[in-house]
Length: 232
Picture 1 (spheres, rainbow, N blue to C red):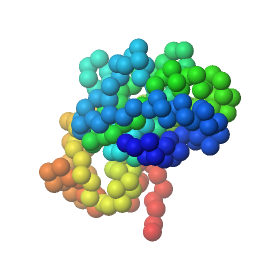
Picture 2: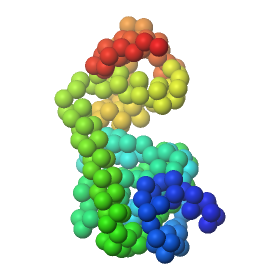
Picture 3: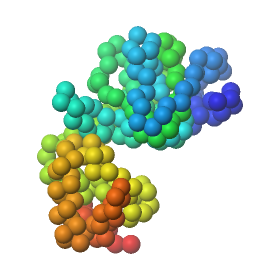
């Protein structure tokens, strides 16, 4: 990335950028390094004493997830072009709040602001500190809501909700995805997702093709997900 491209990325991704002094901006600009990751590869976690710093997805889609000792996964969020890895911003705190994994879901270009540079800014600039704390608080509130849904909603409800959200994001009723990926998103096994999808197929709510799920009945999915039916 060129100097101007990095500056444009920081302006877009960091909500406090305009509040920084020129010397603070220059310190960040000089420290940023970028790296390209292949699809399905883990973004390097073990640099700068295992706390890499603040990561920004400049291009591509990255997935943030937690994994159990048995290998079961739950997706916490996806980060797309010009978005900051908010949970990773907690690197400025003395102790990491939660252990999560960042994976390049597509080919990704990641920009990294080293932890020591960002922490210096966090400690000295009250505007940055307040903004960062608000960002972390909002993200963890969202994560808690996700966990509540995981613990207190049925798998069928979570699956219906996930299909609706994917459809909204893709602006299409045809979703290119796999049963395993959906299972990771909603915190269950691929076998369970397959079994419930087959029930949805039997009801005529969805159709399945290899690598694709096509939604045929949004009203039914909204009812199962617990959301109000939306009529366009």
